[in-house]
Image (cartoon, rainbow, N blue to C red; front, side):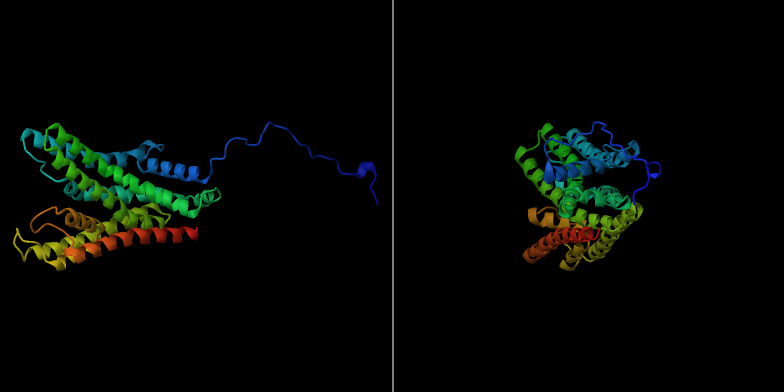
Length: 303
């Protein structure tokens, strides 16, 4: 039975045209989204596009990694030396603490912040997949590390050419340094990003990464130091001490580089022991990078 007009509810629904139009431009798609995520993550690692205080630590670390290279070039120029006081790959090993600080502080910026602010599901609501997200973030952190180490290498190389050192020798050893930089940018970074992705708390991530790198390096240093007391300064470390280097990602890269390019001398020289050691050290480095990537994929399947 219908109600009289005076008892019927009034029609209050009104459609307003406020000028919104559908998007008719090009759909840039999944590849563009993944590249944009990579670019933004790389910028974030150096604080670009963020607040001023976010730039302080990355710039300090970059300066700490580069200024000693300038001093080395200046010393070589003043002493009229026919070679640099330190090799390119050895320089990267010497600034290992600086690189570790950058890695421990910035890896959580790329991973932990997204987890803490619950923005990861927003990324996955777009065309990019979980694998795209992992590749973009992993690649950005590795490239940030690589850029950090390339800066002093370029300073050393440019300085060596300006003071007219042997072009062929410097170019060859600069290439050794590039290989070492790539390995440093992959192996320690792979472990750090897994730790950073495990917790949404940035402080916990920083402490865990720095703790792991510091403890593993200290253990290797103790083993190597104890072994050095049993051999002369000009003798090589025993193989038992060389195998212990596998515990440290940084030591692993240093040993692998020294063995590949026959760098370093004396008891302080870390190297993969023989042909078998070279195969094992290479396999461990590959396993660390590939295993970390698989763990990241597994981690983000559950987010």
